[in-house]
Length: 182
Ligand SMILES: [Cu+2]
Image (cartoon, rainbow, N blue to C red):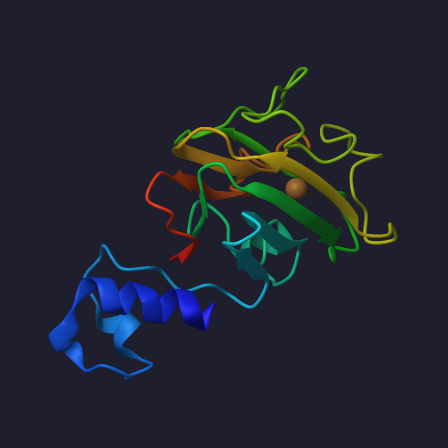
C-alpha cells in the first residue's frame, strides 16, 4: 500500500516534497486514493482482497457495507485484477448479501434472478431474506475477475435493502488506480 502511494507521488509531482508520507493526500485528484485497512491490493499478483462487513456501524440502521451506504463511498479496483470479497454480517436482525450490479441512482425493492456484472460477483442466496448471510453464519468468500472498466455498485439484493440505500459504488479503473474514494 505504501509502495503504491509513494510510486504515485513520484509520478505525479516532483516538487511536492519527496519523502513526505502525507503528500499523497495533498496530491491532485488524479493521484491514488487511500487504501483502507480492509482492502489489500497486490499489483504483482493482480489480486485485490476486500473484507466487507454488512452492519459494521449503525449507519442506515445497520444496512451498510463497512459503514457506508447510499453511495457514500466507492471502492476502486484495477481492471483485470481478480477480486476476492470476504463477506460477513454483523447485523443481528437481518440477513444481507452483496453483488456487483450496474450503477443506478435508485434500485427496485426486489431483484428477480439478478445477474452480477462479472461472473461470480455475488454472494450466496443473495435475494433470500432467510438464506442470505446472517450474523450467525461463518464469513463467506467469493471471487471474480474485474474484466471491464466502468462504474458499478456493490448492492445488497435482499428485498428492500438496496431501495433503502444499502449500496456503495464499485469502480473498475483502467488506470490501475485502487482504493476507496469517499
Ligand atoms: Cu442488506
